[in-house]
Amino acid sequence: MQLIDKTSYVLRRASSGDKKLLFDWVNEEEVRNNSINTKSISFEEHESWFNKKLNCPDCGIYIFEIKAVPAGVIRFDFNEIDNAWEIGYSIAKNFRGNGLGKVIIVEGMKLLNHLPVIGYVKEENKKSQAIFNSLGFINNGIHYIKNCPLLKYIKSSAL
Image 1: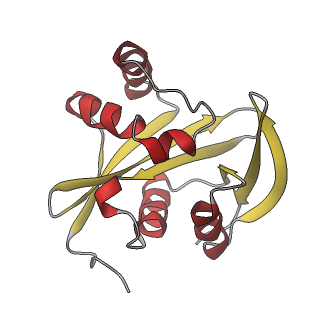
Image 2: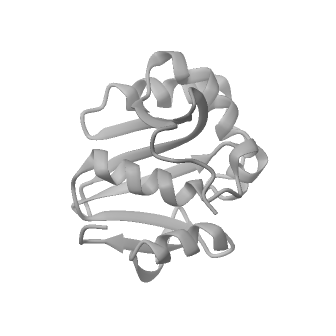
């Protein structure tokens, strides 16, 4: 069952006005648990990171809105080592469980329009694993980032 139809949502580029929204989302408990760094982020750390990413030509941050209500975020960073775009996404707490993870990735990849794309997922994050698998990403096994074991998913062909 899908919560939304294509006429009720938009994926827009993040702006400076989204700084507080993304700060609140990044510190939500489930988001922290699924992140490499599980510690809370200070506003100063977030502000520095956000301003850097917002002005980076090799990064794109997009806010997913349903009927003008922010429901999630997706980010793409160019990873020079893998020569691929690294994806990160999150669905707002009150929108989870409605199949939006898959929607935000599909729509984000349409905007990005570049392959390959890679995603890193903790082993215990079964929901994200299922989403990447359902979209045809290939599980490339465990890779370590900052001593954290993560499953690396790779998408080299169109959705």
